[in-house]
Amino acid sequence: MTKATPADFDWSDLGFAYHDLPYRFRAVYRNGQWEPGEITEDSQIQMSEAAAALHYGQQVFEGMKAYRRADGGVNIFRPDRNAARMRQSAERLVMPGYPEDDFVDAVKVVVKANQDFVPPYGSGATLYIRPFLVGTGAVVGVKPADEYVFSIYVTPVGAYYKGGLTPTAYVTSPYDRAAHGGTGRAKVGGNYAASMLPGQNAHAAGYSDVVYLDSRLHENIEELGSANFFGITKDNRFLTPKSPSILPSITKYSLLELAEEAGMVTEETTISIYDLDQFEEAGAMGTAAVISPVGSITHNDKKHVFYSETEVGPKTQALYDRLMAIQFGDQPGPAGWAVDV
Ligand code: PLP
Ligand code: COI
Image (cartoon, rainbow, N blue to C red; front, side):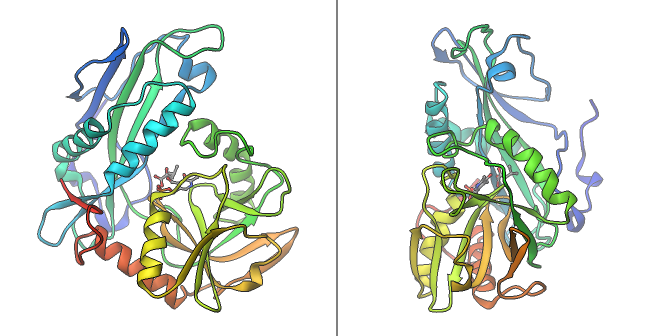
């Protein structure tokens, strides 16, 4: 397969797409242990037709980014958190976790190997990092595989939600993404498979993404298809849903701290879809989404508009600016957040 070269990219006009870059990291688990991993040029993975990942969805993944600093260096953001979350996701699917320190080292090695593809400072683009762990061993009955592959590929990306910092419209769905005691807390492909039909329906109707409601009452906001949700109240409280079936977003936990730093009171709490009037501003937060303002949510054909359908609110903008400044190395953040590659 033809590999991408840096000259192939218009850094200021990148979508959110896969490109076959020169290098990826690959490690194999067999005979009860992880073998030493290595950088490879091979973007294809060979596995048994009976691989547990192919039939029973035994696979987990992560999403991170590398950011080009003004001094030409490269940052990654809180990689220890992704390493820990991947291990927790793996535990939920009875998979061997990849050692957390080795995970962080491997991310650095892959980013360094592909460093010419980290978009320039100021372009707004980043290098998306996708670590993943798949059950490659053959099984017929429903049980864990005995062989696994851990791999990390990278690809340059621009904004995930088309508008970037322009608000977009969201809609609820009769479908659920994750059950109350299901796998919503884990970053497993099955959650995303479950979101494809509702996501497609939402896109066809002109919305950016789905707002999932809790699976028991269909009343409380869970999260969006690819990001956690936040709302900022008129009295300066930063609220985000508390639920056992949403992804523990690293961006969310970071913004909870940055919102406090900005003088807001923060809380993870129940947020009813019928109580949106309390919010002055609302947004999506995640690695891919960064902070994307939620202009409106439509539920049962009723549209609720937050700050504006066309302009980002000032508090959302300020949080976005602070987060980006830390990630791109323009401002120092809390210890351990920006990690030099
Ligand atoms: N929720 C879902 C469903 C996601 O896919 C993501 C993206 O990773 C997030 C939330 C945000 O998580 P994070 O901030 O760790 O990227
Ligand atoms: C991320 O933000 O990293 C995600 O995983 C979201 C989506 C691309 C699946």
